[in-house]
Image (cartoon, rainbow, N blue to C red; front, side, top):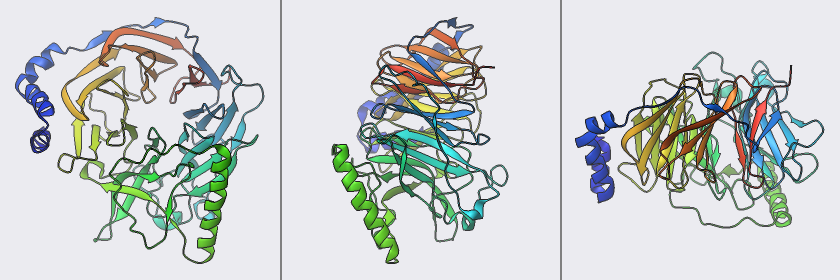
Length: 446
């Protein structure tokens, strides 16, 4: 709280300062007034906009409105890493088997299992992004960097053809830690930044420091590359220019030229390097960092951390990153979402109980006491998903999905419905603006 007050004072942000002072002076009163909302048993309601996708051991879901596909990332025990399901003109899953994608790994990691840590689709181009990792030697022990020198974390596929076509595999080496079971993976609104997990750099003491950041994407959807002599941690804190993506024919030509330049540089012994931004902070001092990203805009990014949530405010050089501990205290399990228009951040602990919190913010700075909604029959398994058109929060739980109604300012209403589905642990959800559908993976029928 002291850090927030100092930052607000130095920034001359009187609105933020007044809100924080109110929280300090009247905190006990507010805490008493903001009692926990409780819902004992949500109404079981068929939801016509929910489309189930039969996908065993599903963990991640992404939908491409451009390509008309749903991508499902599977858990480690599944023989396929990612399954691609085609959609028909109404957004329903088309007949036929899904397309299976298997991600490669080098021979040095033959004893490790690789798996997708996240899947994303470009909002305006038929591109699929997959971030992969490998299982750790033991819990909380990262894999020896010497084994991962040729291990690519990032795969980018074209979805424009009948079969997904691999365009680029990149993000290898010691710049990215390996052996994390979770990690944040997100795109900003105009797809100019790909926020990635497990970033790190070596300090003067020859020890790795954990950080957060992004890979810069060009308007064609592929990463930007620089010559080897470019500073690897160039600060890109200013908002990215809003350059619209080209049409697919132009983008394809740009892809071909870029990939040829990458190959030529590698053949000449001067491989190009990814243009990226990395920021190290004590808030993200251990891997994985963060557990998930929730960008509000290019200046304000929220993230789930060990004991709660953090805000990352790029223009603020003094109060740049702030940590908010939340209750219940369930280390490692928090997942965060942000409302795109209301001043609200939502945080839920997974595999614990039915409490979900709403934290108010003023221009990214946390204010007042969190509001808690306790749905007593729920155990959450997914990151919350805000549905702006209906002003609801959707979340996957134990054998069901749950929809929570919101006030205009993003506060919870005690109006909750659920829909039972054939999946004991709903870990991933995806919303399609084109079809107005919520895609939910389910297990095959018994």
